[in-house]
Every structure is written in C-alpha cells, then in structure tokens.
Length: 336
Ligand SMILES: NC(=O)c1ccc[n+]([C@@H]2O[C@H](COP(=O)([O-])OP(=O)(O)OC[C@H]3O[C@@H](n4cnc5c(N)ncnc54)[C@H](O)[C@@H]3O)[C@@H](O)[C@H]2O)c1
Ligand SMILES: [Zn+2]
Ligand SMILES: [Zn+2]
Image 1 (cartoon, rainbow, N blue to C red):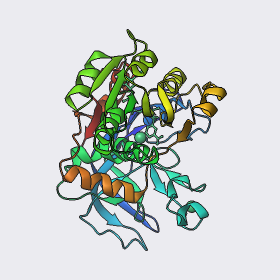
Image 2 (image 1 turned 135 degrees about the vertical axis):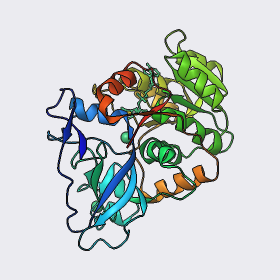
Image 3 (image 1 turned 180 degrees about the vertical axis):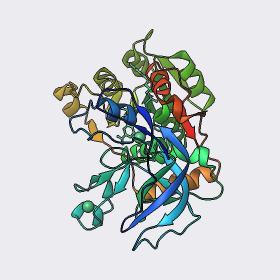
C-alpha cells in the first residue's frame, strides 16, 4: 500500500510502498476513501509540540473508509461498514475520565497519526471500539473534515456554554474555524469572524458570519469591543498573540476557549481584568465518539456545510505549504 511517512521530525514527508498491516486483537483494517489534512498533522510532522511523536510514522486523523478485515475480538463493526478514524484512537475505558464521559482526557489514550500510524495511507489500522460509523447521508468527502475540525469545534462551542443570543468571536477561519462559526451561529447568536486573509473572511460571510475583521489591517480587539464585546471567543489560529486578542475581545462574563496549539506555548493575560470581569479560560481537546456521532447527525440534517478541496496523497508536501500560506479554502482532503 501507499502511505505518507514522516521519516524524521521536521523533514519532508515521503510516499512509501509498505505492506498492508494485519489487524491485531480489537483492531479493524480500514481501506481509506478520504483523509483530511488537519493543521495538527503539520505540527506532528514538524515535531513542534512538547510531547513528540516517534518517527517514522504516518499522520492523519480525519480518515474515512471501509472496514476490510476484522481482527480477533473485534465484533462491533463488520466488513463493509463505513467508519471514521479520529484523533482519539483509543482510550482506556475505565479511568475516572473515561467513565465520566471525558474519554478525551484519558491519560492512557492513543492518538491516530501521532502515537499510532494514521490515515494518510491506502489502509490503516484502528481500534474497533473507537472508530465511529458514518451515516449514509454524509458523504465520505464531507465526513473527513467533520472527523476532527467538526467534532473539535462542536465540542469547543459546547464547553463555552454559549447561550442563544450571545456573541461569539471566531479567531481563524481555517479548517476548524469554518465549522466553528456555523456551530456558533446555530447554538448562539451573532458571529464575528477574524482572520488575516480576505479570502477566508469572504468564506466566513458566505457561511453566516455577521461581521468579519481582517486582523492584518484592523485591531480585532478594538473592533470587537466597538461591537459590544464577545461572550465567547474561540482561538483557532496558531499564534499566542491571537489567544491574547481573543481574551481581550471578551466582555464581562466572557469565556475564551483555547483550541489551537501553537508551537510557541505561552500567552499572557491580565489577572485583574479576569477577576473583575469574571472571565473564564477553557481548554478544549477534540470531542468524544458521541460528539462525532452528533456532528454527523447535524450534517446529515443539512445544518453544516463542509468547504474542502480534493487532493492526491502524492502532493502531500505541497499541500502542507498551501495550508501554511493560508491559501486553502478551508480544508484539503486526500481521496484514494
Ligand atoms: N484542541 C484540539 O482538539 C484541536 C483539534 C484540531 C486542531 N487543533 C489545532 O488548531 C489549530 C488550527 O487548526 P486548523 O486545521 O484549523 O488550521 P488552519 O491552518 O486550517 O487554520 C488556521 C487559520 O488561522 C488563520 N490565521 C493565521 N494567523 C492569524 C491571525 N493572526 N489572526 C487570525 N487568524 C489567523 C489562517 O489564515 C487560517 O485561516 C492548529 O494549531 C491545530 O493543531 C486543535
Ligand atoms: Zn485535527
Ligand atoms: Zn481512560
């Protein structure tokens, strides 16, 4: 099979011919149909996060495909089922987090395309217990971005406790942001989109943003405050400065949801303003299998639009450059 492999951290990916892997206990072998390029895969290949993956490895955690073979003790899914491989490759199932509906916080979890080989390949192994069924009404093309960008921003808006009528500011209209603003529109009220590319802001308008701000030419903090401030700000761009601006845009009682994971790991926020203004800072990591099922159901009901372009795995290095240059509306999806 063909797979994109990170030979060493920071190096260009290589397209390699590898043997199709055999499913072990509890595993299924998936024949990939589509696989999205999340900015997390770029961090993984660069090795720019505090906890590093071990090369050589195959990235990819927005994989959608067909179960081709089941390993011993894998009985939840059967050959022919269409399933999604998400970032949460496996959680233990019995720690305090897992039993309390917070499997995404499990300390012994495995992550697809990071601690285990991922979905940028013609075939991938996954755990039967953790792949999620894709409903018929959701195409494999749309399902790929929903599997990380969708579930992550759906969860981020849930933990923000946004209320109908509240204002949400979405910082970064990339793969995650273009879905975040649709959930914000559906769960809350007014939506303000911030990016540094006019093309992304045009897309944000089409997807229902009420106001758009180009942070390259306009100070987003002042502009959002002029609009009355944000009840919820979601940080989806990979720079600490964006987190600080997102915090600065909050009105009293506002909640900053931290989602992006910039390599530069520190942000500065004013303590006085946090205390006096009763503001909250919330971290949010992907979503559960149930969240992803809900995301698919919303999409099947026509509530979200996925904006993505089709690419070939052979062009993976160019694709990464395109994403880094901010040229992509809004996700790239490899098709097999
Ligand atoms: N917490 C989680 O569970 C989770 C899940 C998936 C991805 N992530 C992280 O989220 C981040 C975003 O991922 P993505 O796939 O959406 O990336 P992306 O590259 O598709 O989108 C980033 C967007 O930010 C915009 N941007 C850049 N600089 C900006 C600035 N100064 N102000 C406003 N916008 C700016 C870019 O133009 C782009 O539209 C990455 O760090 C990724 O690792 C986190
Ligand atoms: Zn992702
Ligand atoms: Zn656990």
